[in-house]
Length: 442
Ligand SMILES: [Zn+2]
Image 1 (tube, rainbow, N blue to C red):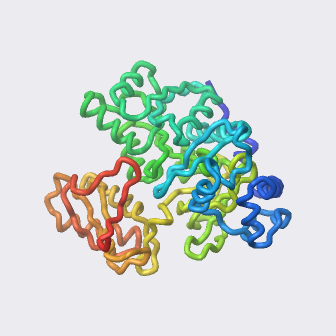
Image 2: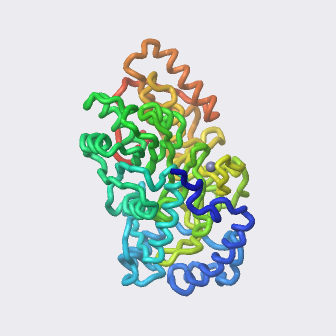
Image 3: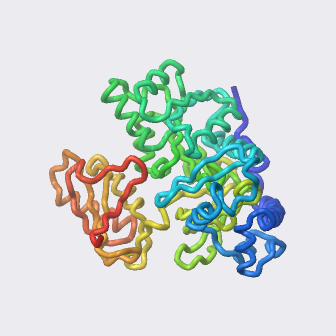
């Protein structure tokens, strides 16, 4: 059966200047709402002498201070459970999620029924962009708990009408049995789980994962699905198209996703959220143009429970604005690392995750595992960058490999590196977010 190309063609293909006009109208309304309903934001606006009516356009947002996760955490400690920044009564909250921070206590995020309905629309667009259709049969390897990915995804898939099989992680045998029984064609999970499950199928069940009939692997919840080296491996394992999406409970569950052109994640929520790109060091707003990179800052323009204004996500994004063949007008974002992890070598910004990405491309000569050694606190690092890299089990000429890895890091990331090769399995593995930096000074 032929389905349309877009879930919401009006918004997804709208020229950006038309969208901007809608965004500015919604922004004005949201600023008034936030000022009236959120003591946290009233205080923030007052601290710089700005009234909501001063904010007429997205560009005017630069007049306002940023909001940080630390402030939200503080606000919830001051006024539990949802905090002073919350703009809706607790009785109107229909669901609570928590945002997963890499550091510190998680922050709760509430949604009202109105918010839930907007999230359903948002997530429907995101799944559709990644190729989900009403006749899709989806195997879900995400948990359904307080983590924002699970239930939000469920709502969206029910709205599309796709088949939803929530197996979660930790039940790989059942996952494979169910895949065979239902002839599922989409696997949605973290990139690490897609790799793990393929190995499990091959080594434990004696099944080539590429023959299981999975046509698409939709990755999320951690970086990797958008990294060419990792993506190619998953695509080869499963004989499938691999896409990724980017989400955060602080924004709108999931907010950007890849189309089949695989050129970054389309920002698909322009009628609910606006974004700015800033220099993380100076806080200066950077003009959004093709190839710009910096930290993403979001402002809600249609949110009831927890509208945020100039919220720093601490994710460093590379933005593509050139038109995409799929016809969607939304800019494409690629997360290149966390602002908090950024290092500076000879004036060049380097993310540990980017080092891991380029080293991963040398598989199987490397295992893709790395560790960066710092002998003093960052972000400035005295060159060369010290990197431990695991070599693959069958490598004979270690000297040549060391040279090659150093060359690739210098060539791709423009920083000099000193590589120390260590045997496969030496470096620590992390179940959740990887710690790629070892601090020798602590
Ligand atoms: Zn596209």
